[in-house]
Length: 98
Image 1: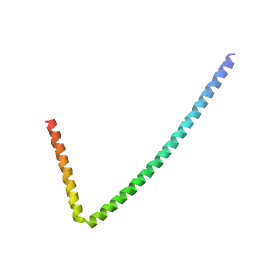
Image 2: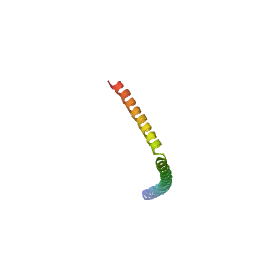
Image 3: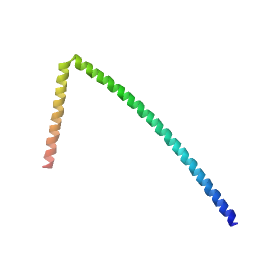
Image 4: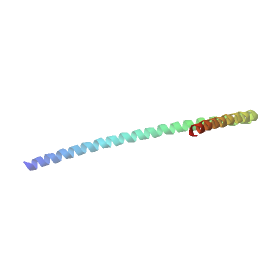
């Protein structure tokens, strides 16, 4: 009787182990599929962004070569705005620390 119970317990444990291993294989396979699809999407997105950036760079280069003075004035204005913003943030930060 004890031998039969032990055999049943071993069979039951073996069955549970096999079932758990099958589930883990399924989960691993699903995760690999998800990772593969995610990498494909990221690659497509990066490629599209790179193409867009290339178009913008080309348009900027064309504009600068066609309108050099206007481009220089725009760059100077943007630089002045950024410098003013940095100085303003810096002066506000200094007020709070002293």
